[in-house]
Image (cartoon, rainbow, N blue to C red):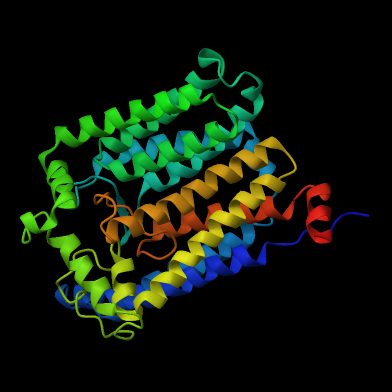
Amino acid sequence: MARTLRSDKLLFWATILLVAASVVMVYSASVADALDQARPTIGFFAKQMAWATIGIGLLLTVMRVDYHTYQRPQVIWGLLGVTVFLLLAVFLFPARNGATRWIGAGGFTLQPSELAKLAVAFFTAAFVERRMHRIDDVGYALMPVLIVASGLIGLIVLQPDLGTSAMIGAIVGAILFAAGLSYRYVVGGGLLALSGVFFLVFLYSWRMKRIMAFIDPWSDPFGSGYQIIQSFIAIGSGGVFGRGLMNGVQKLNYLPEAHTDFIFSVIGEEFGLIGTTIVLACFVVIAWRGLRAALRAPDRFGALLAIGLTAMLAVQGLINMSVTTGLLPNKGIPLPFVSSGGSSLLVNLIAMGILLNISQRASPLAAGLEERA
C-alpha cells in the first residue's frame, strides 16, 4: 500500500504566519511613503496582498510537485538560461537608488537576482549529488559549481547587490559542506570569499561608510549612521509589548526603508519584544524543520536541495534581523516572507513549497522511527 504523503504542518503554519504578518506590517509601515507619493494608503497593502495570494497559491501548487522534477537537466539549464538573460536585461532599465536590480513593466517590477538563488540551489544540489563520491576533487566536482556560482555572483555584484551575492555564496557553501567537502576547502573558500568582500567594500566609499556606521553609528548620526540609529530607537521604544499596530513613530519619515529592509524594526516598535520574538521563533522553526526534512529525505538530491533552500530562507532571515539590531553591517537584503516586494515573496514561497514537498517524502524508515518515538 502506498504511503500517505503528509505535509509538515509546523513548517507550513510558521510560513503562513510570516506572510500574514507581512500583509499587516507592510500596510502599517508604508503609510508615510504612500502619503509622500500622493498615493492611496491602501496601495502598498493591496499590492502586498495580491503578491501574498499569488505566492500562497504557488506554494500549495509546488508542494504537490515531485521535487525530482528540479533534478532534470532541461529544468536546471532552462532556469539558469532564463536567469542569466534577465540578469543581463536589468542593465537596460533605469537605475533606482543607484542600482540596476529591477526589470519594470506595467507598474510591476521583477528582481532577477531572487530567481538566481533558486537556480543555483537546483544546479548545485543536482550536480554535487552525482559527484559527491569525489567531492574534494577540484576539477571534477568543485570547479563546475564555482564557475556557475561565480558567474551569477559576478552579474549580481555589477548591479550592485552584495547582499544577494553573499546569499548565493551561502547556499552553495551549505550544500557543499553537507556533501562532505573537506574542512580545508571550507576554510579556504571562506577566507577567499571574505577577501572578495573586503575588496568590494574598499572599492566603493559608500560601503566603507556602512562599515564605519556599523562600528560607531553615532560618529555620523545624520549621515551613514542615521538608518541604524533610527532602527535602534524604533526597537528600543517598543519595549516588551510595543506601541500597538499603526502607532509606530519611526516609520513616519524617520526610518528609511521601513516597509522593506527594516520592517523588523517596525515590528519591534509596534509589537515589542513579544512580536520580534514570534518572528524570530518562526525562522527558528524554518531552520529546524528544514534541516529535519534534509535528514529524513529519501535520497541525496532531496537532502542537499533541502539544505540549500533552508540556508536560503533561514540565513537571510538571520542576517536581516542582525542588521536591524546592529549585529551586522547593513547589507540591503529583505526579511524573507515579511518585507514588501513581490519577487522576493514569490521566490521564497516557491522555495518553501519545494521544502514542504521534500518533507512529505521522508524515507519510510525515518518516518517510522519518528512516529514510534
